[in-house]
Amino acid sequence: MKAIQSILLFTIFICIIGCYQPPDAHRSIKDIEKAFQNGYFSQTIKWSDSILRCSNTDSLTIFRLNSILDMARRIKADFTMTAEETDTLLKNEAVEFTPSERELWERNNWLEYRMIDGEKRYFKRAVSNLILILKSKQPAREGEQILDSQSRFCLERSRKVIMAAGSSGKPVIPVKLKINYQLTVKADAVPAGEIVRCWLPWPQENHSRQTNVKLLKMVPESYRIAPDSVEQRSVYCEQKAFKGKPVVFNLQFEYVSMAQYFELNKMKALPAVTSKAISERYTAEQYPQIVFSAEIRRLSDSIVAGTSNQAEKVRKIYYWINDHIIWTGALEYSIIPFIPGYVLANRRGDCGMQTMLFMAMARYQHIPVKWQSGWMMHPHEVNLHDWCEVFYDGIGWIPLDMSFNLQQSDNLSEKEFYISGIDSYRLIINDGIGSRLVPGKKFPRSEPFDFQRGEVEWRGGNLYFDQWDYHMNVEYL
Image (tube, rainbow, N blue to C red; front, side):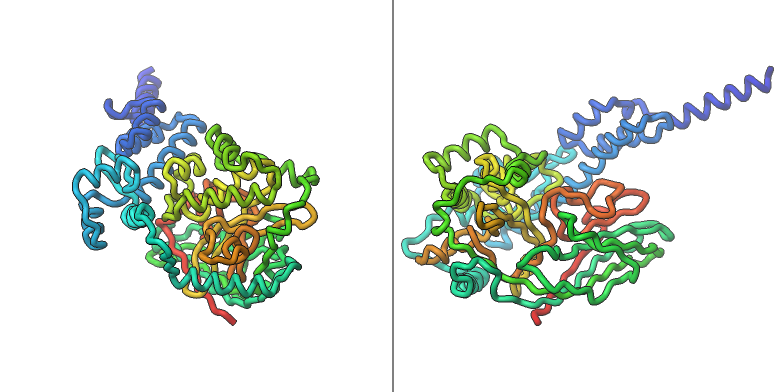
C-alpha cells in the first residue's frame, strides 16, 4: 500500500511540475490576446510560455499561442527604433521640427509607431517615409518638372517601346539578363545537424514577355523546380546546418525579358467581358486582402461614376491612385490585416499595396485583374516589385504598373504608358497572390501573399526574414 501511495504522490508531483505556472502568469487565452492587442509583448510571451509548457495543452491552443507569438515577433522586427533614435535620424536628415509638429506627425501616423511594452517603438523606415510624406505636402512650383535618373530612364524606354510596338501589342525590345541569386541563413539560426528547407524565386515561363529561361548553376546540386502551371514559382532545395556556419543557397540563371504596349485610346469600343471563367475568378474577392469593403465600394463607384467603358474605368482608377496615394516604404505585409484599408487610411503605400488597392477597386467594377510580381531589373534600380495585368476582351491580358505612375510628358501615350504597357526590365515570378508553393510549406510563410525573396524553414518552424539574408546580382548581356 505504501508503495502505491508513493507512486501516486510521485505522479501528482510530476504533473504539478509539468504544468506549474507562476500565479501572475496563469492567464487565459483571452488575457493573452488582450495583452498582445495592447502591445504588451513581454506579458504575451510570458503568459503564453507558461501554457505551452503545460503537457496537457490541446493542439488548438498551441496553434493559437504560437500564432500570437509569431506575430508579436514580426511586429517587433519592423518597429525597432526608439524615440531618441528617430530624433537622431531626423537631425541627420536636417529635418527641423517643434514638439507640436512631432506630435502632429505621430497623430497623423506620418511618423509611424506602435506602443510595445509601454514604450513607443517606431517603424524602422518611419523617418525616410516621413520625409517622403512631407515632400508630398509641399506645393509644386509652377512649371517645375524635375525627373530623377530612374524616371528619365523609364520615360526614354517608354518612347522606344511605343515606337517599336506600334499598334500590334506584341512584345518588343528584348533584353537578356544573367542572374546570380543567393540566400544565406545566418549561422546557428538552425541547430547543427538539422535540415534547412528553402524555396528560391524562379521565373515564370508561360509569358510571351519572358522567354529563354536557362538554369546555369544551383547550390545544392539537388533541387526541384515547380511546374510552370504554379502561380508562385520556385526552386526547392535542402541543406544540412553546421554549427557556427551559415547555410548558403545559390541560384544562377539567364532569361530574356521584353516590353509590351497597347494603345489604350484605341480600346474605347471594347465590349464587356464575356469569358465566364476569367470573369468569375478575376473579378472575385480574395480574402484577406482583395476585399470589397464599404469604403472600397463607395470610393470605386464615385471614381468611375458616369463611365461605362472598361478602359476608361481603368484609367480613372489609375489616375485617382496616382493623384492621392504616394509611394512609401512598407511594413511587412503579414502584419497588416487589410492592406487596401491601410493605404486608404494613410494615403500611402509601396508598389504592392497600391496594386492591391487598384485590384480591389477594379474587380469591384467587374474588371478582371490578376496579380503579377517579381523584381524590377532596371540598371542601378534592381528591387522587389509588384504590378498587375488587366484582361480586355478581344485582346487578352495587358500589363499595368500602378506605382510607376503617370510619367511627366505632354505626350498622352508616354504619360499613360504604364496604364497599358510595361518596360523590358522585369523578372516575373508570380502570376497570382497568396498562392501555394510547391512543395508546400509546413509552417506559416514569412510573406504569406507575395513571393520574391524566398522562404525558409526547418522542422522546428519558419525562419523569418531577420534570420536570413538575400542578394541579387544582375548582368546585362
